Image 1 (tube, rainbow, N blue to C red):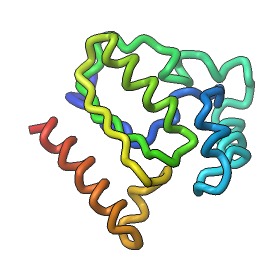
Image 2 (tube, rainbow, N blue to C red; image 1 turned 30 degrees about the vertical axis):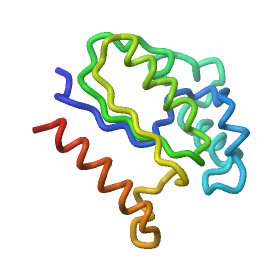
Image 3 (cartoon, rainbow, N blue to C red; image 1 turned 135 degrees about the vertical axis):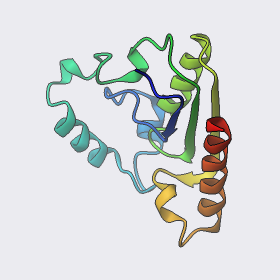
Image 4 (tube, rainbow, N blue to C red; image 1 turned 90 degrees about the horizontal axis):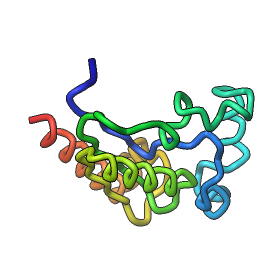
Length: 134
């Protein structure tokens, strides 16, 4: 049984860490490439398994998924894989609302108490998802 909708906030959709934003935004923006690589090694220790569809949604079929709200951040090393996932979902006929939040970093949902921009973006993201669920 599938959920009625999905909320994907700055998703790690490709465990191979091969998208350009990994290196472009992987230093100095809060989620550094070496830390991200360490997390991936903990989740999927064998490199050969990282592109498996079960581990990397970007490599899986998207057919039949429920509607999706997908949020990416401009200064996030995971930005490109989120954008590619949104496009993959669209091509599969999945209703997807993709929004890239300009000027923000990975994890901005947790920065609302110190960043008015993060607070506004978080409110927008959850309002979109709430609208989708209604």
